[in-house]
Structure formats: structure tokens, C-alpha cells
Image 1 (cartoon, rainbow, N blue to C red):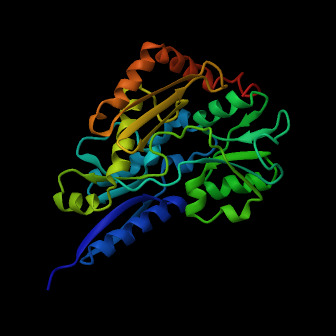
Image 2 (image 1 turned 90 degrees about the vertical axis):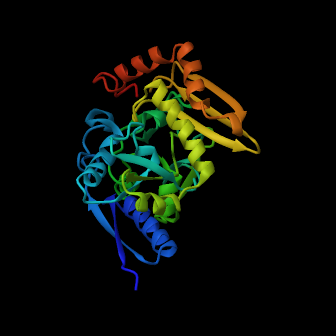
Length: 320
């Protein structure tokens, strides 16, 4: 009789992270009945420090670092991440080897009072922690007041319900996975928003030296999602934007073609730069880097440097 194998998944302890980890556990145990999967739950620094913007505590990498440490120390074989939280630098000895099928990448505006972004009154208060969302929101509605919004999904929704914000912006996919959309009176998909690198896909990171774990992880991979998100990550890596920078990038496959579009600017919605490139899917390996190079040639690095400088200045909150 074949010996039962044990696989340990490192995961954050938030509701959404646990949903994702259990989803992957179920898929692995269905495909590999001889494997028993256990979860190693970690409360990350990014989940503990809720009174500061993410960029000031080191960006979204804090959501992944502790999980990576657990793998490096031999306490887990595999980590399940929201791909958008995974920095483009992967520590030695680990690899991001599989990307799950990407789902709806929309950002959504949620409110208990107003039906849509257009219906928000002048000077309304909108909650978001993301500089990317802030930039795109203020480009369209420079009159709005944007206020920091930290905490897990349930905490954010509670703050909205309590009236601390007229509206908040979150990723659709997390609300959908946790079945939380039913409790919110007004939900509007912000179709004009460009998502961040990797939104709505899960990244499976493994210990590189373990071929059996790689085999199991690769059963979760979706080839098209892998290609699209690789180009997005190449773009972010080349342009040198940290996870918290006001940068949006998205790759979409249409037939035999693939298009990568990106946007960056100041967090107050000014100095915006848009660009996109299309190529054949069979020739797209360098498309993300090429788009970054084209934007760098147009002055993107100066914009990003200035954006970082002004993002968290003490005198900015009222303007933001």
C-alpha cells in the first residue's frame, strides 16, 4: 500500500487567504488522493500593523515574506498567495511556479448611500489604501477626498457601514469568494480602472529543490494566466515599481494576440501616462519589458520618483 504523503501549505490567517488556501488544498487532494494537505497559518506583519499605509511598512511584500521564511526554514512546502501581493523578487531557493486561472479582475465601488461613482456628491470621502486606485479615481473625480482604508475585508466593510466613508473601493474577486456582495446595497464595477499586476489570480510558490512539490503545483497552473501575469510582472520589475507604487498594468489575450496596457502617475490623479503594446502570442516573451522601456523613454521614472515623494507627505492628506 502506497504511503500517504504530507504537504504543508503556508498561508496568511486572514479570511480571504484561508479561503484561497483551502481551495488549493481541495484541488490538490482531489488530483492527488495519496497526498494529505495541512495548513500552516501565519499572521503576517502586514495584517498586524493597521495604523500605517502599507508602503510605509515596506509594501505588500510583508504579506509574503513570513510565508517564504516558513518555506526556507522547512516548515512548509508551498505557499498560496494573492498574486498581486507577490513582489517581483523571489528569494533564492524558492520559485513562483504556477498561476491559477485568473478570474474577474474588476475593482468595485461599494456604498450604502450612493448608487455609483457619478452619483457621489462633490467632496465625498472614498476609502482605499491603494495608490493605484487613488490615482485612477482622482483622475476621473479630482473633487473627491480619499482616506486611508486598512484592515481585512470585513473590517473595511464595517467601517463603510458605520459611515466612516461615503464609498470604498475593493477588488471584486475577494468579495465574491467570501460571499460578501449580498450585504452591500450599491456595488459598481469600475470598468475604466486598470488592475494591478496579477489581480484575481493565485500564485503558487514552492521550494525549488522539491520536484514532487513542483509536479503537484504545476497541476494547478493555467498557461494563459501564467503568460499574462508574467508579462505584467516583467513590466513592474523593469520599471522598478514597488507593490505600493501608483502603477496599473494588465495583459489580455485575444485570439492569437496579446495586449499589455499600463498606466502610472501621481497619486493625486495628475501627471498620468498611458501606454499599450500588442504582439502575437507566439512572440510576446519580452512585451512587458518593452512596454516598460517605452514608458521609461517617455519619462516614467521621473514621474514614479516624484509620486513616491508626494504619496505620504504629512501636508498631503487634505488634498488626497
